[in-house]
Length: 375
Ligand SMILES: Nc1ncnc2c1ncn2[C@@H]1O[C@H](COP(=O)(O)OP(=O)(O)OP(=O)(O)O)[C@@H](O)[C@H]1O
Ligand SMILES: [Mg+2]
Image 1: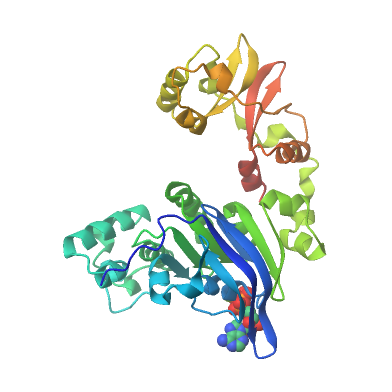
Image 2: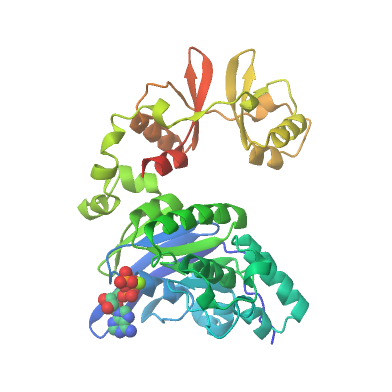
């Protein structure tokens, strides 16, 4: 039985005034939240605040009492729940692999139910094992008990991705792992996240994990959404004490006042410089050759702006001069405070700044990286 694809990609998931009660207690109350296509949204909050309930209302493992959940403007109530679930991946803590089935059969289960032929399933399983850094030949015929917790967690992720769903729901996927392994998997997952470009809703208890992985973070407390925003927004503009306490800005970022840009910038490389006389095509070639995503356009030693590979790829006329394409960016000095630089960047919505000393570039400040280094 082949399940029809419901969506090739996610444009949005909307909770409209959603409430779920158990008896007289609210599990989730009046939730309005929009998850944007392509983002990794974190749900975080104290135990019992409604995170899992929120997540499970997306795939209808839990049905709300009132309000509605819409994916790409389709009300999930109008969709068949099984079909809905087959169109998204679901990863939980202690992932629940079937113990009597090999790793290969665990990952290939849904493709098999979907009627794929053997070769196609094996090809897919091998690709996925490789993707989660497990050597296919070594793992495909093993049983779950022959794998470490971290390896099993990787298999859980591979299984959730078997049908290449555009949406992944993850409920404390790394929650049961020891802290060091957790850090390692987070790092790997960050890489995965960049590569796969899926929409991901991710529940965690761990604010460090949230700050590292999340594009945006939704904070829940006592069945209510308290605040949703980027890590920077929550850190710099918490709506109340509770949010401030969760992101723990005082403790974790206390040293930020004393930190200088030079402590957290990445070294500047000569390859980052592109001459303003180049055309878009030549610039793209050069950036590809140097394996860089961002560059800075200079004319006779004067900074004109920044250029990303994305901008070049979007550019229709390849003969256009890059001096026209360069976008403005902020510059700071090595001794400027990091807090100042980050808040300036946040205001203009820029993630990249150039660090200049005596009119010469000496470093690059990347806002996400700064947060990563700080926690
Ligand atoms: N099947 C159920 N029957 C009764 N109450 C429930 C049920 N499922 C959840 N609840 C209650 O609903 C509230 C929200 O639960 P939920 O599982 O969404 O919390 P959570 O934020 O995921 O917590 P945790 O961090 O502990 O996983 C809690 O008070 C919980 O006790
Ligand atoms: Mg939960």
